[in-house]
Image 1 (cartoon, rainbow, N blue to C red):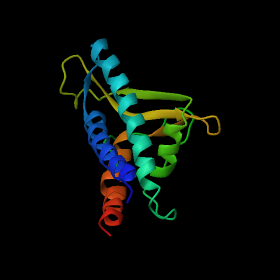
Image 2 (cartoon, one colour):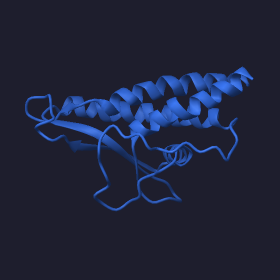
Image 3 (cartoon, helix red, strand yellow):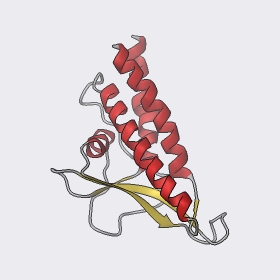
Length: 159
C-alpha cells in the first residue's frame, strides 16, 4: 500500500470516529451558537472523511460493497429525496456536492437529556450536478467505514 493511501486510511479513521461522536450527540435546541459550530464542524469532518475514505478505498475490489445499515437514530426522509444505501455512493455524493446540508431534527422530549429540548443530526443532505438531493446517515457512514471498509483496508495493508 502506498504511503498516501496509508495516510488516507489513518485520516479517514480519525474523521470517522469524530463523525460517530457528532452524529450520536444531542444538542440544545435553544443554543444557536452550539448549533452553528456543530453545523460547521460536521461539514468539515464529513468532507475530510469522504475525501480520505474514498482515496483509501480505491485499493479495494470494486465489487466489495459496504451498506449504510447501522443507524443511531430511527428516521426516514419526510421530504423528497432518496436515502443513500451504500458507502461508496455516499462518499461520491459528499465529495462532488454542490449542496451539502446538516439535518437537525427535534428529539422526542421524553428522550431528551437537555432542558428546553434537544436536537440531533440523523442525516446530512447532499446534491451533486448529476444526482438530486439525497439523505445520508452520518452515523451509518462512519459505522460502514469503521466496521466494513477499515478491516478490509487493514487486510490489504498487512498483505
